[in-house]
Every structure is written in C-alpha cells, then in structure tokens.
Length: 106
Image 1 (cartoon, rainbow, N blue to C red):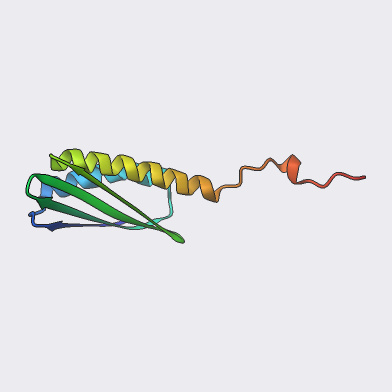
Image 2: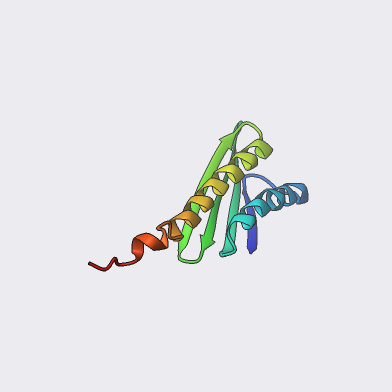
C-alpha cells in the first residue's frame, strides 16, 4: 500500500503523518487489494477536515470527516473508511450456499 499525505493550508508534521499511517493500518487488515491511499488534511478557520481516496482493485472508496480537532477528524475518517472497505469486500464475496446453486433432478 502506498500512502500519500498532503496538507492544504496546514503543514503536515511527522507526527500527523505517523498518526494517519497508524489509523489506516486497520483498513489493510480488512482488504489485501488496497493499491493506493491519498489523504488530504485541510484547515479552514476552526474547521479541520480529513479526506481520503482509497484505490482498490476495480473500485475507489472515498470518505471525509470534519471536526474541531485534526486528530479527531482523522479518527472519524479511519472509521468511515473501515466501514466502506468492509462493505465493498462483502459485495465482492458470494453469499449463496452451494446447495442452492445445484440443480435438482426432476
């Protein structure tokens, strides 16, 4: 997984980048097909926004979160991405039992 962290009107410190990496490691546990993650951290007055695009095999998952604290916004972002990656993974799996797929003789 390749992780890019950029800042818009904010300097991305090593502690912020490390915190984003730590939080997004949880997403890697749910899907082995993550190719690229691009995270943008933005500050507008008192509003801190964290947004990310996750490139998977055949899909892209986007999430954003807004809070008064940047670290809280990153936490909320990680939770949203975690849910969305799990949902995408479940869509790909076949939930039909094999017995229902077999043709019964008449």
